[in-house]
Length: 535
Image 1 (cartoon, rainbow, N blue to C red):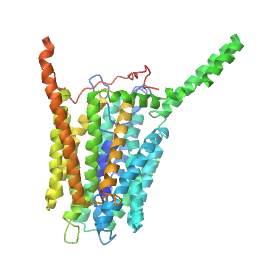
Image 2: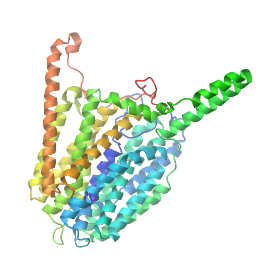
Image 3: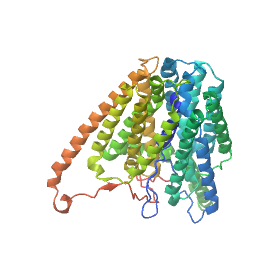
Image 4: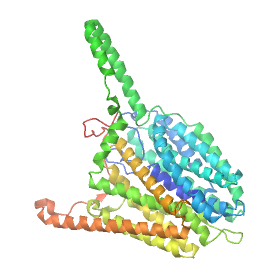
């Protein structure tokens, strides 16, 4: 998120949706949830629904959702760019565009992997507390800071908050059994969306009807994030997580079993027990038994599957363009329609509308029935082409309402494809491997964003002004659109060429794939090396 664009409430919610990997999938007919994009615990480690106290997990989920709602309410977030460019802070457009905003992406890229690993190692809660502290620091700097370095530091902490959001989307799955995954995923996501929507509307009402200053609006935001920090400290501490803690439990069981075996051997054959006890110590390849390492090795097989490869590349390249637009669109709006006493800006209202449309399109995507193995590339190409046209419109128009409308539609089209990509990637992976693949995709997208910003936006690069940057974004989308159309032509031609060769029943039309029942077995699928993903 850019300095001012960090302000975007919509920006933040989408970062959650992608980085936190929490797009909801429909429930399978057998009662098992579909592959969520979030980091989740292995079903084998989760307690069964019957053994859990319903009142206990319901209250825990309700409290976590309340925390997610309250931590998303930051009324001043959609107006940070106008605030920095106003007489209250008096930064120039060039400083905000080329020196402050780029720091967010660099910070996010640097913190993303450590946050992903620490979330699992520390079992969620400490990372949520770190996120709360970072949010408080952000608004303290906005209120008290005045130098360029302080605003860059603010963006650094914003990168930390974005990277730490994976903890929220993962945390809720440690509270319930696998059969409840889909339901609680809907609860947690709805809480975030409702919080973002409420935040945007509240900020717009305060500014338009209350006639309060940007400073006061940010002071209100500080109060909300401080309350969110207090709530994070009251969250229960889960006893299990996805990778490290499961491995520890497994090692403890193995040590206990080996101790029993050793004592029996001591009684039977003392000399044999000594030689057998030396064997584990000589094992230099224990690291290969770690679940995380096994899955990193297994990721190599993902790129060999065309469907997974296509949607993973979409996730990397299209999300890169999407977040570049989100990071800089507020600066564009301020260039087209500067915020003054006579010019009332409607950033909050636009973010609220775009969040609402994004929720609608994401929901509608679940009811699309087409043969995705044939038409995926064409659908992606058409939607990417439309997004390219909207970017060209935003970058060339002088009408702020055209900019607003183009942005709302741009977000809506992207969010339409997110649940489709989630389903296509998650449907053939275990929960653990799915989380890792989405994490890698997100990191690669962030790395690509950093490179583009360094070249075109950073003052050490070309330092383009915001209209020129949007033309660069337009060219970027045109290039990937052409690639998608070429791939679509190849796939469709190959499909219809091969169809006559198929005999009998296979020659008939295939059943369209719907974003619905994707059964997830409680048993983890084995890796190619024969080992299970479950610890």
